[in-house]
Length: 240
Image (cartoon, rainbow, N blue to C red; front, side):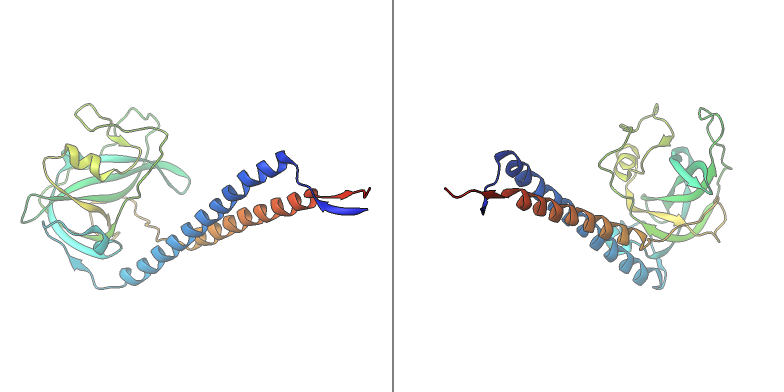
């Protein structure tokens, strides 16, 4: 009895379709791990750099990200909004986002003033104390992530829009504001007054290991698929 390579059409077709998909998923997770590694390295380098002072001139966000910054200006509480679905110590709440009109110009920067507890009745607007006078603030500049998928679209910003935002979309804010906005957000330093609960989390290496583990799983599945395919394709054949 002779063993010959005799693949069946259906398993061959399935393998030709699934193998590239599994490899692609593995490479995607590998790319995500590399991206997070670079982000962590950038954060580690910049967070320990001397603070920089920003003014009304619009900065290149990529050069400012994860830098400690200082600035001053007046609060525009009329355009304050609340970033929904924020959790602190297993409690649901909001991040309070308030524009700061930068001193010496007509531009602004959004400032994340920290976390507040969500009221039991979500139709009730959280009350924040009024902010007056010139504010001198410090914090860390971060670029909000770009969300390609959300469960709910906030839609264009107008006078009828909800003050509760699902994602922090800088472009959405700037499209409706009467002034230009810096392309980053300042996470208000815990030592600065005028904020709420602030426990800012730095980028973690936890997701780096997760992405690598996911990549290994996808590559392992591809390898298992190929092994099974070839085991089934080599079949005994009786010689005449």
